[in-house]
Length: 212
Ligand code: SAH
Image (cartoon, rainbow, N blue to C red; front, side, top):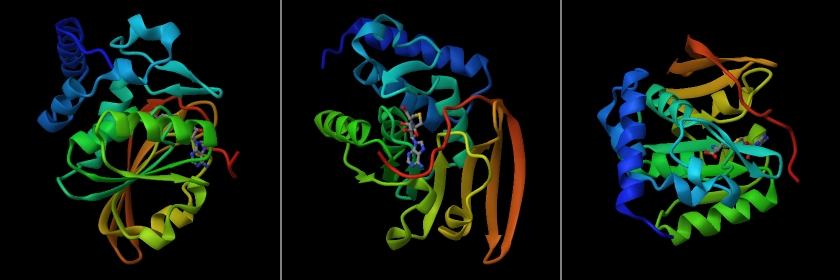
């Protein structure tokens, strides 16, 4: 992967844009300022790598908008060495951001092509994490509980399985809704007590059952 002063400069500008839009967690801003987003882009969109927009990555999916990645990551309140499960690996960009925040990342993708591609790319870039090809609706019961769970696809409702895989005190961030989604942050206060807060509207690709 080619990395130049030009890329670094564009990343600094992207970080400034995110600050203006309200992202203020220094660890999140540092992570966005470090991950080479251009490595995750399809070749046709390379010169848009540091635009604050979502782009197609093939297989009918998208790499999330940097603002959305930063916003979800900020809501998760990731601390070093926390176990974080991401549902929807996609390009792998969000997983790299979590890894830069020193989380122990478990990432799940239902499309084999994307799973293979992201695994190859993230390993080449030196990111070490756990990759799974599977249906995120199941979560990863044998690796639970997780400190944090992040869903990066639009869910019709909050999957019970994922709530069950949060440790008490843990946080799930998930966009819920049909055409437009509300960003929910759900904290598992105790074994059977959950606290939900709402954090604005977003548009994601759908969270689909099964794997392909
Ligand atoms: N986090 C990604 C965004 C990817 S878009 C990034 O940073 O690029 C959402 C992804 O969720 C797509 O790759 C889609 O295939 C995946 N997805 C949708 N439903 C899923 C499911 N049930 N289990 C796992 N992944 C799923």
